[in-house]
Structures are given as C-alpha cells and as structure tokens.
Amino acid sequence: MTTRWLASMAVALTFVGCGSSSSDGSSTGGGGGGGGGTLPSGTLAGTAFTPVDGTAAVLPPTACSVAGTGVNGNAVAIVFTNLAGTCSAYQAVGACNDKANATVVSAIVARVNVTGGTATAIGPGTYALTPGTPFPDASGNVNYTFIGYSKTNATCVNAAASVTATSGTVTISTLTGTRATGSLTVAFSDGSTFSGPFDVALCSVSFDVCALQSCTGPPSCIP
Image (cartoon, rainbow, N blue to C red; front, side, top):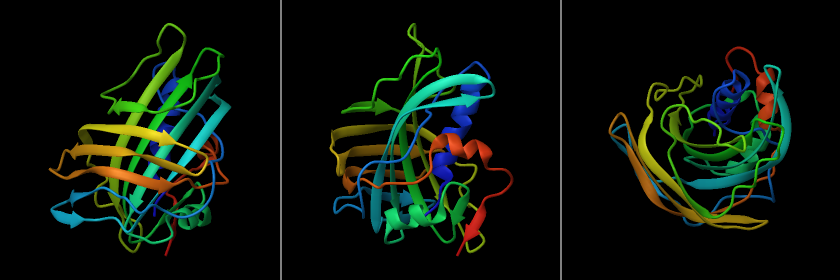
C-alpha cells in the first residue's frame, strides 16, 4: 500500500492556505481492521487489476493551520490494493512513507471550511470528481473529490505519477462505525478504468492530514 492518496489531500490543504481551494483537514480514522469482501475492478495501464483488499478511513472534523490560514475539515478515504492486510499496512507505514510494489486505487471525498466554521461531515451521497480548483461557497465550505491510482516498484517509484482521473464518481451508500459501502467509477488519462461496488471495513490510523505538512522530501520506502 502507499500513502500517496493522503498526499493529494495535503496538496489541497495547501491550496486552501494560499486562499484558493479545497480539501480537508483531518484526524484519526474510524473503526478497526481489515478489508472488504466486495471490491471494484478494472484495467490499469493496460493490465487487468482486481484488488486483493480494500479499506476506508473516516477522518473526523479537525482544525489545522495551513500557511497561516485556519481551516476545519473532514474526509472519507477509500483505497483498493493488490496487497493483503490493507489497514495494517497503512498503520505500519505512517504518514510520510510509501509501500513498495503496491498497486493502489484511492478515492477521497473531503469537505473543508476556510472561514472558521466547522465543515459538515461527509455522509451518504454521490460525489463527482472535482475538476480543477474548487472554491468556497457562501458559508466557506469547499467540497473536494479525488480519485487516483499508483503503481510503485521495489524502490517506490510510481509508474503512474503523471496519470490523472478524467471523469468519475464516488457513491457512499452507508457509513457505519465499522464499514463503508457504495460504488466507484473512474476513467484515467492513460485509458485506465476502474469501477464497481464496494463493501470495506473502516481502518483506524494514527496520523492525520495536518501531519502531512511536516513531510519533507521523498517519502521513505517500505519494502
């Protein structure tokens, strides 16, 4: 597994700090353990990809200071990977590390308030991929949906680093204290696609998105 999906949220937070855009601030995830029995599938970089495992994390409302700007946000992050023990892997690698030889599709639905209020929680609904830079509404809330994939080699070089999602939606059907269900569909700039229903367990992680601001340089590579 890899923590690149979290890095995208840190980038979005930086945009907010610069007075423009999106994503979340956050904290530790929800319930426990392993992945789910129902997982999407697709073709990534011309190769069929059926994940072995998946998990989700609910990142509850958290206040951060980003580039001197106070923000409050929350998010739901969902990942699907070729490695067993998804939750344990994320708990092991932490916020500033990557996992070698990992193929990961990640989806993040985030909401942040940039005017001192508390962003409302992410709940059931269908969330379309966010094109470009989103801007706050009249209440200072910004919604952000990211979908991406990465394929790391033995030294954690990501072969899909330049690939972006061109269209997609994340549907959250249910979100309990232990599981997340719904569906996902996405198309990528290299012709890759990934879609289907999911039913995955929630994973409790010890880091939050705000902590990613302290990550400098290339992430450590975990074999």
